[in-house]
Length: 450
Image (cartoon, rainbow, N blue to C red):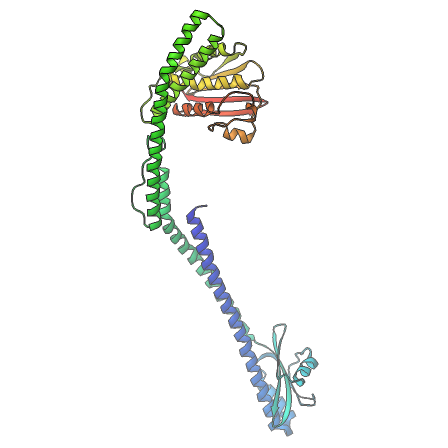
């Protein structure tokens, strides 16, 4: 996941969560305040009612009716009941609203509690014990806080609107901040992506970055680049030097073997000659690759690819006289020019030699089939044998150095041939793929037409 997206996600999630928590806390506190403030108003009305009932007890019945008629609009849907210390009802408001659990509330007040509060649906219910002029009175009030709930509903709408507005604002700010914070990292990544790995040496990253961490990363990356370039240079020079030094003794061995062949005329000397020449070809190919990687342009010429393949088949016939290669043509472009590629003959010969040797070594039976498909802009060569196929896990590692599959037991090799082949083909702007299908192994090579 991109750093910009992570910053945007973390910052916006944190900010929106904090804002939502703050708005929710505000709503809860206001709801608690509404309940407490309304119950306090109920209490004050109860106390005032008891005071009037006590002071004007002789006319309490008429007074209660008059007082209730005057205060009927104080609360919406309210019921008040006042009891003396004998639990006798001495006042009841005109509303026909029912109060649940009256006896339980009165028992709580008689047992020493001076205050009771509860909810019945959306109604606030309070029970209160009041001592007035040496007498105890018990009162129960049940009322609906229409004004308070109206304000609470309005507050919910305001909070919801603020949440949407602030969330959109936070998302826009988060996007701006994440883009600004991630821009130096994106620029650093772009500099790395622009490095041309085909160059003789890796270039350094130039330019200054906004943050100290990226500046330090640039310094460390450039230091690593210096070490890699030094190692690459040493490796290329070593390979070139060893390949060059080995050419002379190999040439001497070939010459001496040819002299022995003329003197002794032993049949095994033919095989030995082919093996020695094969070793010399590998060394020549390694020397050419080392020169190319060091920046030296390889000599490229038009090469007819099927002629090169027939030359290799002829050479391999001395090593494996009982193994055959059948060559087929699929002509989409009938011009002979479609058979030519631009390349280095030493390198291409080594690449195809590795493929054909591989096919003959791993095949269950002869022959292996070679299909040459001529197209308008590319030439495709497929080499197929019926040997044991590789599983999917092995196919991913097939062109890696020193890799050998499960079917390589008892077959000589170090696992370098296909890796070298892939390198040579890519140097010629071509491609190579392995295909396992119907119990057959196929190497498919593609080159642009010269």
